[in-house]
Image (cartoon, rainbow, N blue to C red; front, side, top):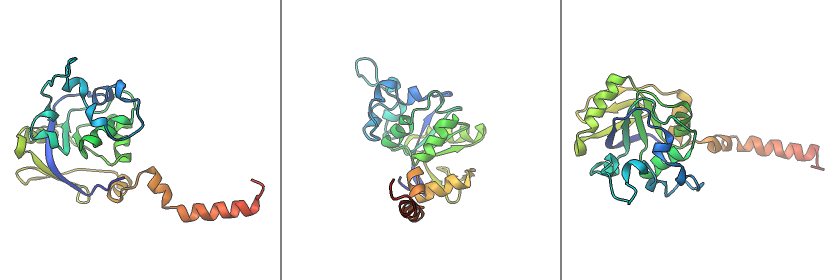
Amino acid sequence: MEKFTTQTGVAAPLNMVNVDTDMIIPKQFLKTIKRTGLKEGLFSEMRWDENGNSKNFVLDQPPYQSAKILVAGDNFGCGSSREHAPWALLDFGIRCIIAPDFADIFYNNCFKNGILPIRLPQEQVDILMEDAGKGANATMTVDLEAQEITRPDGEKISFEVNSFRKHCLLNGLDDIGLTLQKEDKIDSFEARHKDAQPWL
């Protein structure tokens, strides 16, 4: 998993509440277990009509086509527990999502896939949503180590994050990476087990 230390980039505004995982990545895109290529399905029903014509969705507008941060409404990522939702966001380039609240499973899946979800009070999200609406001037910096968001005008907003999840993101550790940190102990156990029960 790619480390998350700081992220500077354009922030896109998605001022909608209850954005569920089927809106993020509709069911017809769930046939793959690959984590790449999913950006084409990201928000597809909001981006394209039945004939494939653009609906001028925010992420298809310059400069949001290269957005790294998404400022969203309350209860983001609700609905089914599909891991393809954070995969699609990450494949597009989104590394951080800021919202008043997230659905629990989606929130956990973000951390496991290298995305930083930040919960902030509604009034602070409203400020950042207004910032994000400024187009090319909507550049923000998210500093995980300092736990700060720097607004386009230079003002800083602090955020909270679980210390263990912070450690994992800063070091690029997903569940497999965490397990491999104990590789020497696992190898030692397997060797002892093989000596004690060679018939297995």
